[in-house]
Length: 199
Length: 319
Image (cartoon, rainbow over the protein chains, first blue to last red):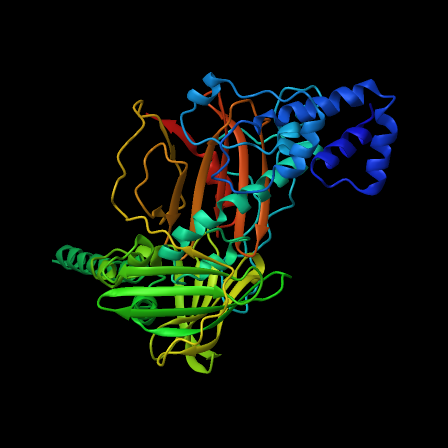
């Protein structure tokens, strides 16, 4: 199974596959056993989804995934033990994301080199019309607070993580806005940042 | 005799030097504390609670369409009632009723630093430099402009316009790297008197939550198992008391707010990170193993990516 197919499959799971990628997958899936197995594994990983209380999320990340899962038989229910021994609130990682990010299948590429941030040099502070010193505001310099470096991710995993961050923003923005509204000088206006306000 | 005079001169010189140094230190204690700005900040943090107003606010970020919302705020018998109704997009309404006037949350306390400065502490002026100039006209009102420059790379800058008369915050631009405007709030129309205009149609109504600061919910975790954020940018403090095993913790420095969420996963996660940004909001998710246990840590807030990353880096289990 080629790298290209793998990426197409990942894109499909992220609902981001284009027509060409879809055609390519459909054409191959009949004859490529490895592709079929990988596809099944991707879906099996989505078992994280099933049987969990996702009421907190109120996000419809599941519908498009479930449609795919129903085709597969690899869905397993969470065991009682798994449900009991969870120290804190735990939510499902969306299946499409789990498939690429969660370790378990050999479809996952190896972790790459040791240089986690290849961003260019930090921009020097330039002349500022309003006198703000923070020309560094949003830069991505390496965290200077000691931990392990973050591994370079393969494109599929990178896409999955970006999707994960996007879903988390959807999921958590309102709860964040509740506190932002009480602790910043804008009154209720921070709620305007919430992608979709829930009751 | 000559020697004595020499010693005298020397000690006088030393004394003079010491005095000079002392006065230098005094002005260097709170370099960001422009006294006029401090006065305005204080007024701003009070007016948002104490003044009756209603109006229309626009919100812009990046290339997105402008959002327009109706806001109203009124005070009766020591409690405030406020609402925000989206006139565009989703059309949701957020209300907060019966919020006691004396209920001051940490973010607002952080902006009232007059007493701190007299006591030799700089508070928020240690982390931002404030300066005041004449503002433009916003919603038909004369404004005073406060330029808020971040003191380090862990927070954004702001340009705020306050109503000269009431101190109400009329306009805020959040400034990122290279003085790029990340997002902008602005009153388009504002009135301090008269009845609220007819409420716009809302598709849904959300009642804003109100966690009481300093009140600890009973600990439910028998094991005392929890997590903590071990590094915060200077000047940030918790907005409310949280159980150690709660899924969220929120921090503010008075102007910026971010929340940290943790999810224990029931299988290994491939270590990595993902970021999305919208306006001044960063959502940073980080998959990792904490003492062998797979977790996903997400930082959501109005801080630069690097701040979110460093905060996520510092999450640890505690007992």
